[in-house]
Length: 228
Ligand code: DC
Image (cartoon, rainbow, N blue to C red; front, top):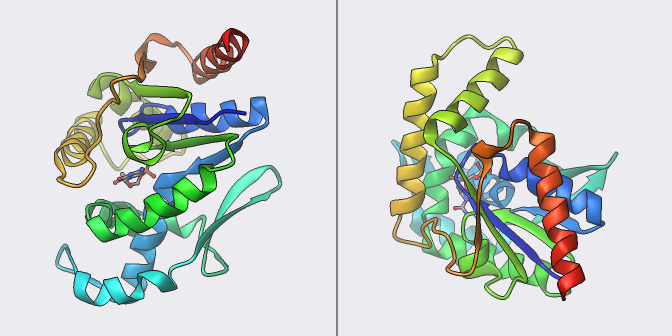
């Protein structure tokens, strides 16, 4: 077995691709964004975030009390924070709006990276995040860096929201949000998002559908394994 590291920008379709690839080849999918989201939820619940600032001094001694694990239920990966199913809550707006603050804290990143490296030590994982190929699993046999233009990514999110009946934001709002998140992800001091030198860049805009993108990844995996 090998490890697969999948990094890239937000809304690039990387999570859908990573999840489907793992399922297709029988590997374990690890959503590292869910781990940062769980820490953000912990901080919100403990009143550690006020006015866009995290109380790092109070958070640090609590870090060992944050236990994050994943379980597969009905074929879906569910995130647990200290034994509680938080899968829905970590996808909500409050966590989404605060998670980048928490993901920028060096000590939080070190703790998460240690956990993630432990999860990858026996191989057989498809790990999805921002720093997997560069920091977490620099020896991963397959490294993919998935991105495309902010406009295409925003359009995907816009269509998803419209399909759910959400008409609260315009396409221009979402383009601005995607660009802001790119800026935060690529300019933070601690492990900014960047393509590993040995990662293969995947332009997700060239695929007409998510299924095509998934089929490409599965095919790439099998070709790699045959050439080994
Ligand atoms: O992929 P996502 O939207 O669930 O990620 C949530 C946040 O965590 C986002 O601000 C990027 C950050 N993140 C990170 O810094 N490093 C990772 N390996 C994964 C996510």
